[in-house]
Amino acid sequence: MLSPILGKPRMEETQLLEDAVRAIGVFRSDLKKLIDQQTRDCGRYTRFDLWCRGFVSALSELEWSVRGAATFSEPIRHKYEEAMDAEEASSYHNHLYFQKNAYIRMFSILDKLGYFLNDMYRLETERVKAKFSYFTVLRQMKHRKEEPDLEQQLFQLKTKFKEPMERLRVKRNMEVHHINAEMLDDLQRTDLCKADRTYIEDLDACLSDLRAGYEMVCLTLTTSFHYFHRHTSAK
Image 1 (cartoon, helix red, strand yellow):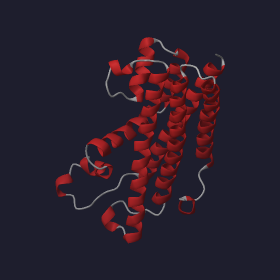
Image 2: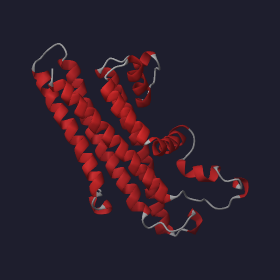
Image 3: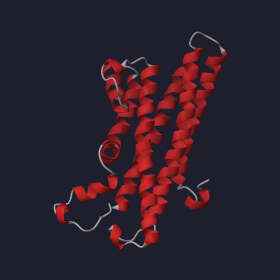
């Protein structure tokens, strides 16, 4: 639906998405075999399969959002909204829409993976924190020494992308819990009380963070589902 508007995706982003979707697909094949055996756990495996379908849909929507944020940033030339004409302002607000959807969805996918891991390995993270995040689950895996090989791989990805993910997390929290993300720059200005211009953020830096976050999410899912496949098929 959006292809005529957004054009072709970047090759590296397409590859990241395809790798993640392929890894999920292989694990779904493992699940199908387990479900067909009609053991007492087949209901649990069916739940995992539904989760996998949700991951594929969410990843596709994330890719669209990152691409949308990049596409609509291209016509933006001015540093504050008041200088924009109607067409440029429209592009800016479309950029904001896709940017927000991207970083909200990134953390949504990671948190769903956290619940998936918690269920699969019976980590009981809910005993530590009622509403837990993916990162809480990683700490629980380490604490319980559960699947240390997987935990270490996921921890390395978390560390590699720590800085852009932290900036995206701040934006997500501001958007979801406090105020709109486009107000962040103004909040940081010492002359906020007398500002008569609505400055926009550094779009290049924003897109760099979005692409890093997208890469982190795709690699995290690819790593996880490769691991799930290896250990499920070995049973």
